[in-house]
Amino acid sequence: MCSHSSSYLCFTALYLVPLVPLGLNPYDEGVRLYGADRVLAGNFPYYDFFAYYGPGQFYWSAILFKVFGTEIVVARLGAVAFICVAAVAVFVLCRSAGLSWSWASVPVAALVVPLRAGDQLITCDPALSLVLAAGASLTGAWGGGRQRFLAGILLGLAVAFRHDFGLYGAIAGVAVSFWGYRRAPEEFHDSWPMAKWLIGALWDLRAFVGGIATTVVPVYGLLAFHGPARLVGALLTEPARLMPFRTLPYAYYEVLYLHAWMSGDMGSPGAMADPGIIAIFFTPLLGLLLSVRLVGRRERRRISTRHERIETLLFVLVTAIGLGIYALGRSDWYHVYPLHVLSVVVVSIILAPKVRSDSRLIAIAVALIAVAGVSLRIALVVSDPFRVGIPVHLPRAEAITVDDRLAWVGDAVRDIWRYGDGGPILVAAERHDRVHWNALILYFLSGRPSGTYFHDMIPGLTTTRQVQERIVRDLRENQVRTVVIWKGPVPEEPNESRFSSGVFVLDEYLRAEFSRVRETENYEILVKRE
Image 1: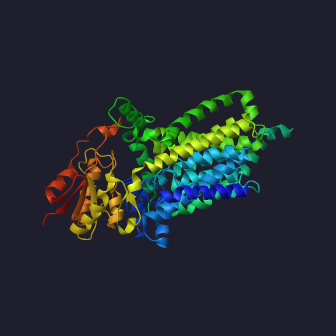
Image 2: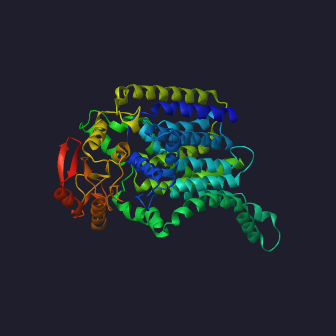
Image 3: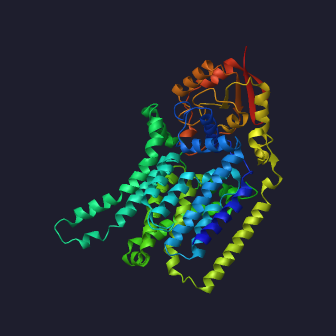
């Protein structure tokens, strides 16, 4: 298994590294890169700048920047490393469950194929990779028996990146530990068999829980030292309150693209042309359909003929339930992707035992599908707009190329340097009674800090009077003299973000105190009036 694992590690790296320079995500990447830049400058997330991700998202990239230099490529190569861990973990989990190497390859392909550019590498969150690696340790898939303490440490690290993902993995780990004692009551003949079973199961968790605590307590304990209320609010209270402003129906945009294409309003089906994107929405439905069959005793017996198989399936299923909650919150492909990966593992484990591993017919079918998939993938890459990508030509974006839709980013950064005074700036939206997101990447690329704690434009937060008054107060106290207005459209999504808050405090301040010195199709530069 070791040689196969190494092969898949190399395959994943070779597949992903050429994608690293391609594309730019002004918002999602900007959140992480700017946060890492602030951490590198000595700031603390949640206290010195607004954040809703776990601290690991910022500190991991900050460490890489400190060692290798502050560039986008460095952060993306760090993401590639975690995706490689996820690929190997998925492979060994499936092999431990008794799947042949060809069946175990299916989830690895499902993990990497949807990723088509460097800015999409963040879709496979490090927390997902760590949860999968923890599952492999807990079930003994790495070899050398169960490593509960190591599994706990990995889940603790997952909590540091995304506390919700880590929690789902921890619940799955507890379920697997209790499952290991499922036959214990039959071995006791006194009057308290269940009590002994429960005590034994809980005692068996000590190393697992200890591993989690070893990581979580220092990370969050040090941050809580600056004020636990702010930490709890940023990671728990605020995200829950803001969810109604972000929710989306399942595959909402993909259905819109398909409808527009079928009605003749689009020349091509857009995202629907990529089979990887289609699969992301299809596989969770298939996994749910097959999982329902486990209610039947015959199906459960067939699956449980191998002890490792049922443990792996249990871990993946419980984790998938949690990720299902996450995916259904905002059901675009970015948020459904983690559930898609686990769904393919579930589908493979349930379907593989029904197929003879030495069947030539199945082997030929798998080979034909693989060839067809690779051929289609090559065709998509050949037709990809990045083949004639536009270099950004910025110190922190060396080798990064974008398509013509984002060519303005480099010009915007150079205009910030040209018209700015070298101090903090504000990257704003055209209006602030309704917002969707702002181009946070401009903070990182320009090397200029935000002039306000609330640098991130979020519906339900930025649109409130309290936050806008805080932003204006920060801009005055920090003597911000340069503002970039990004002209991105505000989409009409079926959630609370479609309604105006009626708050124009920030807009009125910018109109009263700043003058436009440059305007383009995509952005404006404002400077403070003397």
